[in-house]
Image (tube, rainbow over the protein chains, first blue to last red):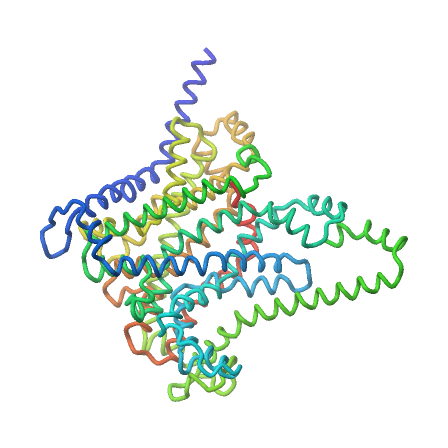
Length: 308
Length: 303
């Protein structure tokens, strides 16, 4: 009797659950599953608005890998950005959060100021930096000349310095990454530091043996999002390269900029879908590699499932 | 920090350490603190100087040079407040852009709050077959970049005649967003399960438990979601860029991007438009920053 009743309750609960889930389930179908399948099919066709679709099989992928110079340029630009930005933002964000975690007077004001750029739109930040990085009259080069550098970089107008410029613009918003570290730092129990102090650990040892291991889950999160985000850089670069034109000598031809150009400027929806699929595969590979290696360096204090 | 450790430390110091070592310790602490302040002030100038330059440029009349040989970090000579009405209504339509953006932003906040709270509730507090699998799917959709699906989505929205309207920018948010569902789920799981059981004994059904008990207790995480949604849709460029073709329907981000990349707009007006774009986000940030940072900390990004 009791069992039958629980069964009824459970069934009622289950029905309610699926009702509650229904908006998301609908979205999953309409905006994920169907588009994923559609995208796979599209990627095997020549699909342009004005012409009838034509089945190509793997031709788009072959063209991408063997005949499309811009695709490889976009991979190179994106990787260059990744290599320059991810370690820099990772370390600088952590150092900044350590600074902002100090208990000194006025720290709230400093936090407020340093977090401001992270809420600004990428477009607005880019517009500002287009002006600041103007090679001839911009404020950055004026300062550099005052410091005695007679021939400062031409930033966005130089193929060598274009990607570092994007890294610099992103660095201006480093406070956003610091918020995440800061919440990680504040979740570290003070008793750990007290114990370390009693054992005679100095500030560097406390960082090395308490802070660093305790913050590895946050580091994992920042690393993962940083790697994936490198393939999703768009808004800022679209502005920095005059409406997604890819910069001088394709120096700002980021992966998503190239995809956008193929789809919405050239109207090659089939080919762009193939590019999108490669993006998914790259993202999946990055996630798998990071998770596979994370067991070696990420430290979990407790089982999160049990504590929540 | 001092309140926690001071008593023990002070005792040790008083009894065993010679005064000269105390002095040396103090000097070291003061110079350490000074170094920290120098670093913080340096970093803040790195943030504030460009903002000051932008304000200076935005307040210049058309004929004054925006780029001076020595950069000006704060307006001194020129205070042309008239540039703002110029940007908002006269020479540029940023007031219209702002209203357009507000429509999308409000639609998205409503969509996210309604759908994600309901779905997050189911994941957090209801038992059903398939919950594990569906949760994994949720995590996967969080990790797949949505831009990978924008081409078929675009063709679909064109097909049903939504191109050039705000519908493709608003309606999907009513089906939930994986990240916010995840945040809300994490938060709702921290609410004691006894509450539900007590409510069930009192005869409340699942919907009433959600609406009267769990939802009111979840306002901190809902605030975080609302603010993130505001920021994301206010600042979004790619969506409006793909779906909007009529200048009258542009959002602030798209209008601003257009100014610099395509139209040849004077720099003083561009910077005024830039300020118009960022002021709402900065205001929202100032009002909610305590809750926001606390919210991120409470939700936690572990595991």
